[in-house]
Image (cartoon, rainbow, N blue to C red; front, side):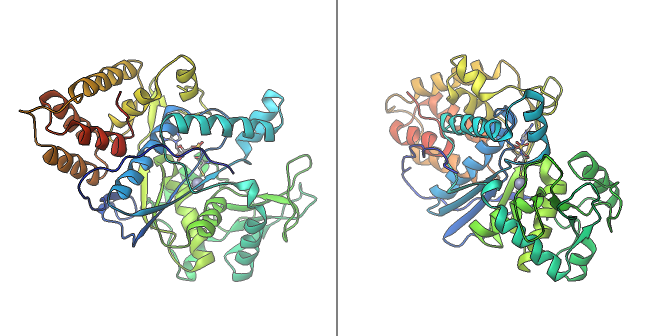
Length: 415
Ligand code: 5CA
Ligand code: ZN
């Protein structure tokens, strides 16, 4: 799919090195080994409602990672999926009496405009599941052949049987272990599987946690041909196949919100290992959950603050971006209405304080060094903002260089 325009990113004087990032799988800070190209996959939207602050926070977090990598002289290859066929999308389309395709297209378009307004660097590969149904069907066929998937009797589908991933078989082949990404115990995994799209009670499965990889067509449902009969892909397999096709195995960082730690990232890593014999990614990174009115902001609950609504009210998207950056990406936090005016005041004070060079101000090289060091340490944007506050307050000997750094690293272009 078409993505959106790349924002302007100035070059910052001086040099930097790659960042350390928290890895969920090893529960430690790691310096991900990139080679010359850092390869990043971030789980994309299910386009049935507009971008809310939770989505925006997740994409701004990985945008910061990209900016830090680029500042260290690396090339970044970034891929992102769009889950443009899934049960919640179909349910919303039916409930609002629109076609699922029109709903998805409309929401994808809104997402593009939100991301552009937030100065998020676009993915090189922005791939909708409906664009890769054929390779997904072929991947499921390979899993059946190598014994890591099996058919479950599906009497309500005239097209054939549903196909499930065989967790025990994949473990027995020695390519991957259940729990290696999330670190959760079995009871937790079972509960999260039930809560987040799994179907542990489905009869005929070998393990209640085994996830669906191919759903055989039910009458009246969208469907695509495949060697398995007509149907559509399960959820986790879409990210495994898109990531492997675009980035190859063992890429640098798999990212997404902490709601994806299990089952989604655990099982997409499992599928990828069963298909390639290699780990999916070196680092599994997760953002905290943004809440609103006391609960996780989510399309299914409807407690949303949408980026597009704020933009329509005339809010400068830089204020939204800076409000997000004021929180550490791994923290859970709550959106409140005072965040935008606070961010606006901060941008105004930075613009004022960094308008011209100060003869008695702080040394610019120290400010740039500290700013880079904060971001390299697990993307500590609150610390970076405090450094910019101090520089604007005291003045610096090269205001243009600090403005360039704020623009390039934090994505905020000052007036
Ligand atoms: N399409 C799947 C991923 S393959 C999906 O989770 N879609 S989503 O639209 O629900 O979420 C898009 C991205 O935003 C995901 O990375 C998800 O983890 C993240 N996300 C969703 N809600 C929040 C929230 N409240 N706070 C932070 N991140 C969130
Ligand atoms: Zn995903």
